[in-house]
Length: 137
Image (cartoon, rainbow, N blue to C red):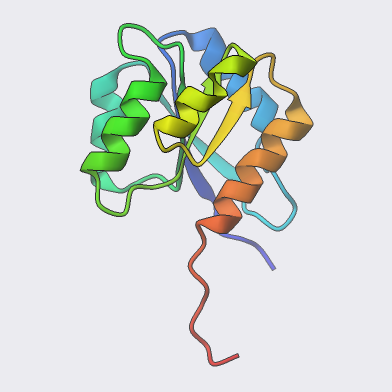
């Protein structure tokens, strides 16, 4: 039985950060989830367009992005988009996890990214965001 693919938006102004996140999470974060279709964004306008369109299942935002970081952007999106998709924030310092939580992120990743932890975190958030099928059983 094949699972539906997941569209994940990854945002950072640095291509190497986007690549590190995509490599850590992988093409399929868990066996019970579909493959990942990555959507890369290097600017805020791209993130806003994708999120407004409702075309992504999850967003992973770089907390250190410039000029606008993923933490502030997360808070903005959570307050402005009804039924906002889940957002994971990637931070450089473990001590910045509280900022990502304050911003209403659904989960936090800490650099350097551990592939096992990154995949498990993303899989958990994707599972939590699933809408169960209505089939009477």
